[in-house]
Structures are given as C-alpha cells and as structure tokens.
Length: 386
Length: 52
Image (cartoon, rainbow over all chains, first blue to last red; front, side, top):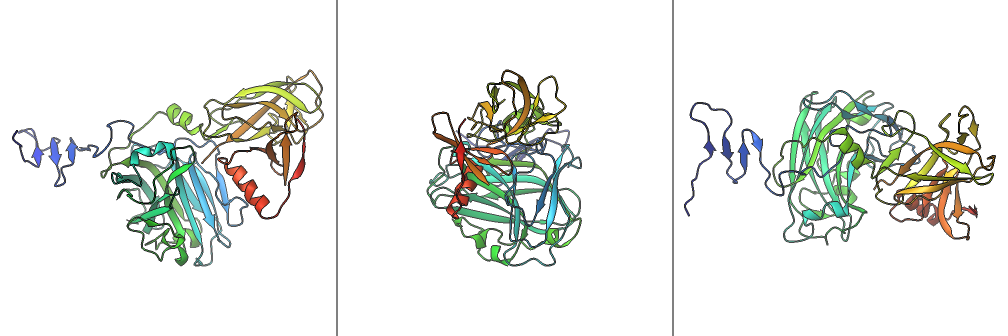
C-alpha cells in the first residue's frame, strides 16, 4: 500500500476549507479539528460546560463560611480557605463568548488587604470515577486530556488549571494560561496521561477533578507540577501569579464553553440542549422551589401529628443517597410544610424528609402540629453532589 | 447541631442538621455525611434520635 504525504488538500478554485494534516498527523476538516482519540460524539466529558443550568441561583461566598466548598452553578464547586476578609458572588451571567448564552461569573465584594501565603480560592469540576475510566489513568495506555474553555476577567495575567486524581496515590499536574485582554479569550490546555499512581476507582465517588485557580498564596505555588507528581498542596497552583481577584473590589472572572475531552487536541464545543444538561445535572442536585427548572410542590397525608406519608420520586436516579431539605410552599422556610388547599400559612417546624434513597423518599416527619388524615404540601431540595 | 434519626424499629437511618433541617443519609459517598463524621471526630456528640 502506498502513502500520499501532503499537508493540505483543497479545492482548486478556493483556498478556503479543505483538509489539513499537521506535523503530528492530526487532521482538520474545513477548519474543524478532528478528535485525536475517542469517538466523534459524546466527546465532552463534563456537564454544564456552557453554564446553562443554575438551579441554586446566586451563591454568596465569604471568607468565614462554615461550608468552604459550596456548589455554585450546577456541577461547579467553589473551594476556598484561609481568606481573612474576602467575599464574592457567583452568578449565572448573560455575558458569554460568541456562540454561547451564559457564563459563570465571579464578582469580588470585600477584598483581601493582601494575599497571605496560605490563601487559596478555586473552582473545580469533579467527575465520578466510573465516568472517566476511558482515561486509563495509572496504566501504560493512559490518555492525554485536553481542557478547552473561554475565560474573561478584569484582571489579566497568569492563572493555573490543574488536574487531580484522588484514588490510590493522589496525583496532580498543572498548566498555566495567560490572559492578555479584558475580553473573552479561548484557552486550550493539553495534559499528558498519568501512567503511575494506581488508577481511578470504577465507582460513583470522586475519581478525577479539574480546577481553575483564582487566588493562591505562595504556600500553593512552590512545587513544580508541570508533569504528573504525587500530590502536595504546594503544587496546586504552580506558576499562578495573578491574585487581582482577591485585592480589587468589583474584580470579575468569567468562564464558559468548558470542554474536557480525551485526546491531545481540542475539538469544537459539543453543545447540548438545556433539557439534556438539566437532566444530567439532576443526578447531583434537584430543587423544587419557585423559580427553579423543576419547580413544583408535593402532597402527602398526615398519618399522625408529626408524620406525612408522601411518595416522592426524583426526576433522575441520583449519584448517591442525597441529603434533603423540606420547605413550606408558602414561605419556602426550611423545615415547614403547609396545609393543602390552604397554602397560605406555614405549618410546624423541624420537618425533614426521611433519609432519601437515590431515587426518592417516602415520609416527611419530625415536626408537630399536623392533623391526622389531612393533606399537606411541601417542596424539597436534594443534594448528591460529588 | 446534629440529631440522630431512627426508623420505627430503632435502627439508625440518618442524621438531621438541626440548624438547616437537612436530613443526611448514612452514606459515606454523601458530602454532608462526611462533614458530620468530621464533626464527630472533633469530639462532638449528636442529640439522641426521635423515632419515625
């Protein structure tokens, strides 16, 4: 068999389009990068990369939060530690790169007077281990991973994206990217596969994490992690230098069009419908309160003064048995319910859902003041995030 | 802050955060249960359970 060695194939009447082959043998067809590994479809491993789904709404983050790792837009987790005065809001914003309608937006409120060595703030996407087995992490065949995204910030400079694998020996690798303008910029980062470290468990727990660092003091930046290494905190943000998000009031940082895929080239963002993304997100979180995509109330019958029998099925089987909160449909106060057909007054307090199974729950109980035989209404949220 | 949750037979089936009325399953894959375990490891003790 003979081989034709060319770099480009084009129509004789135009210089547009055609097929290009780069020096590594990777192919572009009519300007579209072809995958270097894996299938043509289902390439985007992450959910909500276009930031379409925001069931929680605006999330306020403060330096003294009791919970230092809240989820914000669906599937996007903030993690912060050791900040002294900083706070910010995380919102779903309509300012987005061309071809997208939404972005995740971080806006600084109260600033840090200075970034201390131990300060850290970043956003992460956490994959279930069973969803990243194709990476062949920890084997000789470990695949490269490419992370592509659009970013916009009022604080141009050098930031870090890192990968982290928790199972067996925890491992990490990082890369920097430099933003030069205050407009949307496109970033592609390709990471080597990790042949060491013992691999990723094939289960529903965290298996793989991608993180975007916004603030990092010197305790987090001193160990070279440009190749895969055993995890140490000092490697988390190696090369990160821009901490303007911490020290400038009203500073902003936005992210959209995130695609994590197997291979060493970024392919075009794989768009999905809102319904598709919402269903995927609801494996991890669902909220039936007003203004949410799955807003509705549920009804059950009191079988005594403190217990309501109610069969609630989640719209998606959840990743794990979720935590759940019951809300009154009147005021949406946590722990209260309301009398059905007279939903103008909260009833009781301290009601909770029985420990939910991954696919639903069947009792609301724990409060008082119910009348046996009457029907009561309630709403709920359930959280099974990684 | 936390109260245990038993079923009708007295079996432990969950934990309630009494600040937020969040019911938490006995499931190590659940983030809230992990936080509860850390809280216990710090030397704290939950309130006893109310039965269902």
